[in-house]
Image 1: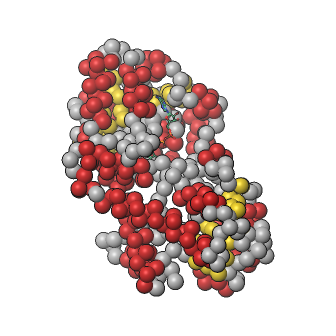
Image 2: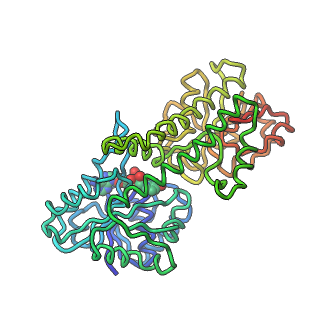
Image 3: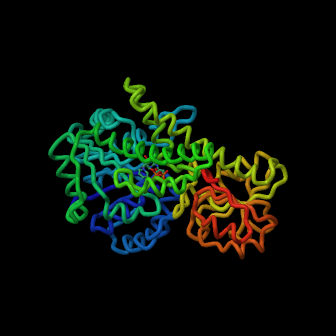
Length: 438
Ligand SMILES: NC(=O)c1ccc[n+]([C@@H]2O[C@H](COP(=O)([O-])OP(=O)(O)OC[C@H]3O[C@@H](n4cnc5c(N)ncnc54)[C@H](O)[C@@H]3O)[C@@H](O)[C@H]2O)c1
């Protein structure tokens, strides 16, 4: 079994490192964030991911998983090095910020003294792997003995353990049979379950990831565009989506209307794809992604409008209870979170917004200190003039409208996620509004 390093131990890297150790590999996790390394080494997962804390304990106890900030140790230890650092949007541009990938690969290369495979897992612009191959072979003492491969990651936060242990497919972007062999060895237990694998070139493997995310974003924005049409016609987008979903060719997944997508992946990935495609002279082919992004952003603005309409047109002094902060349920990730965007816009418009999220409170407080935060859904809804459901956590779906009616100042709710039963809420005396519904 090859010895593995995982460079960058955030949502993706920590999950990968922990799961690979549980699957039987010796793994060294590497991060520049010493505090994160310390927390992981002491058995604490620094973010919310169901099932992962238990596996971290198990992996540490096995003695197969360690964490470090030392690239020298990583170079010495690893046969296969997985690069899992962040590729956020570059400030002031649609392009991906490649500083972290370039930094990590540069730093690691100095310590590659023997044959090794560097495997990118981060989501990157097409052409990155070819560029990094030159860089690694120039910088590494082992020179052309070091090869580069790309193995894009498709895990979903909230389901990250399952998606890592039992992925729908693996994609290996390689430039030699040796690199493919190394990847097959590094994933042997996953491949043994019959997981399909697509072996391809470097550029295709990079493209698979952004193409997949572009498709998912497009599907979400498609149904949200239909919600806009419904708003102009009096039609009901929820019934429309249900009827469309019965068609196998369309399918119901990612066809849920609402406040739209956010997070650390879809928004920045479609923008980086647009940017890179333009650089490559094929911008026209994906120019529709600009519209996909715009439709998505309009849902946030429209949610704010719905709240304003529901309270009679004026937000100044209105007490808003915001349920949810994370970009989706079962995650504490607030990167580009629609929920916080809406909460913050309402606050800027003069409302007093109190937020509660089951997992993302610390992250939300850090990124949005201007908002106030409560202890529970009941706490933030007390005396509220309007309630806005922004992230569809199960505990919000299960709220009893009769009980909540006894807590609020006014029974008004905007269901930003089509998560509630409108009939039940209306029966309990609530004015219920949702995007794209009469
Ligand atoms: N989060 C997801 O669900 C997900 C899914 C698929 C793909 N991805 C992709 O994976 C990549 C990582 O995403 P993430 O969500 O894990 O990000 P993250 O911000 O949670 O983690 C990135 C980690 O890299 C570390 N880092 C930065 N520079 C470093 C360096 N030079 N050396 C070592 N470590 C360094 C950071 O300290 C951080 O811990 C991105 O490209 C993302 O698009 C993420």
